[in-house]
Structures are given as structure tokens and as C-alpha cells.
Image 1 (cartoon, rainbow, N blue to C red):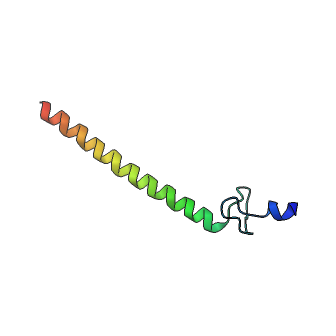
Image 2: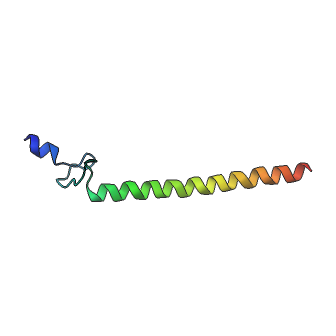
Length: 61
């Protein structure tokens, strides 16, 4: 019983964790995709904020 709990994925409960993170490949791929999407959105937001600041400084002159 203890071995069965040790060999399950933390997130979905499947039987295939392969490393110390205890996540299966499917959960790792989902997490990687989530962080990639989050960094893309953050980059777009930072670019938009930069444009707003730059246009505000150009108008004041």
C-alpha cells in the first residue's frame, strides 16, 4: 500500500511518476504549457505598458 502511494502522480493520481517531482509526463506537459502561455501574456502586457509610458512621455514634450 505504501509503495502504491509512493508511485502515484501528485496531480492526477495516475501510476506513472518518473522523477522526484512525482508528476507524470502529461501533468508536466500541462504545467509547461501553462507557464509558456503565462509568460507570453506577461510579455504582451509589458510591451503594452511600455508603449503607454512612451506615448505619455512623447505627448508631454
